[in-house]
Amino acid sequence: MEAKPQEINHSAGRFLTFENYYQKYSQAVYANIRKLVGDPELAQDLLQDVFVSLWENWGKVDMERVANWLFVVSYNKSVTCLKKRLRERTEVSDEINFSEELLEETTFDEDLYSFKLSLLEEAIEKLPTRKRQVFRLCRMEGRSADEVAEILGISAVSVKDYLKQATRSIKNYVSQYYPNAEAAGFLLLTFYLSA
Image (cartoon, rainbow, N blue to C red; front, side, top):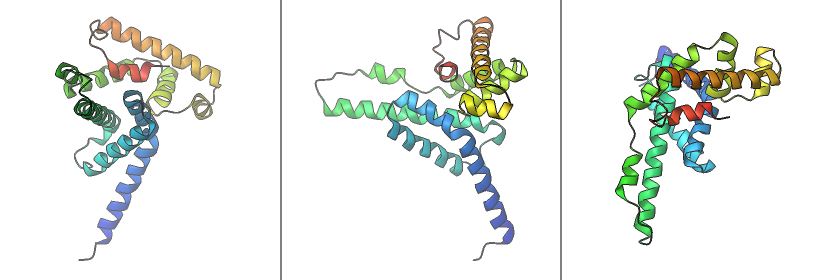
């Protein structure tokens, strides 16, 4: 059975949109995965898994929140991978005595993770326009200070200054409005707020 021209155009459009998302978010998602797993090759494999999942779940993902979805899935896949590796190590070596409690500490709570994303988004929205632009380009899209400077028509020094100010403002917002957030171990925020 031959594909209809409309189906071909729809598939081509989907591929181009997918490619745009990959170009826009892959660096930042990779950086976050790498911070979790440490190994660059493993991080690259997990990045590919994340984008395969996006492709497979295309009709189910709210495309207005695709960045949030990518970070949730990347975190989930990273934690699952780390738990699997930890289990394999305990099976191989009787000398190392890891407890199940350690494995349980890394369980993924999607509601909490979504809350963290919402909290981060809320804090970002409170930033002045220029700081918000710099933060999104540097931290959400993984662009360098030089790239952001060129995009926004400002100096790289200004980009770094805006980024520091934005980071400080977001940390202050979180601690002011959600004082227990720090105690909750907001790993997601450390991804975005690390220098």
